[in-house]
Image (cartoon, rainbow, N blue to C red; front, side, top):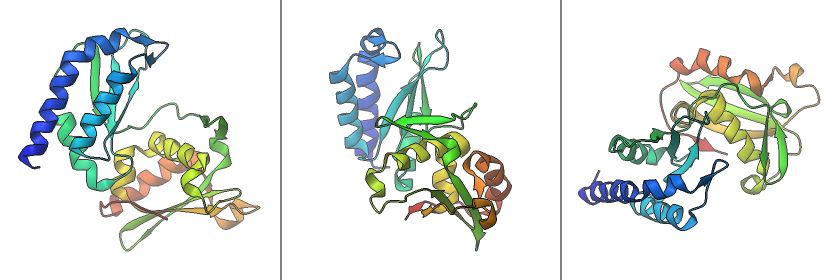
Length: 214
């Protein structure tokens, strides 16, 4: 990492340390009423790496807020995320985490852009070819406009919950979106809810590598 990037990371954490109390005190119903502050964070992160993202979670009402950093699925930015979180200060009331980890229990549905996407609507196939994992997601009415289909975002959230964002980026070579056949079982497909088990059985045979989305 270049010296300039190291300086920008230091500047980000210094900015956050000076404003974290203001951010935490603005929290209401798991949302932060500090839009200008959050915008400043995003602007600073973009200067480090344009793919850097963050969001907040809190599992328990009295537990610390978790600030989770990612890179929007771009494996070339994994190092930026790890470098950023590796330099994080130890602050009271907030925990800093790299990437979305596996989640239990796995959500049965996700609401994206006012569309309810149910886990049971999606099936998958997973194969190892020349030590590379190829994942295919099957759903009804596959659109050529995948980049604006809210179901795609929902499935990516499901995938993070099922196998974790880091392993999705570093173990899955390709991700395809295909039309769901009338009888998925006849095509040896499995419900997406079973992906974790299938992935864990195959992942160690796959060479760690980035993800290519088709």
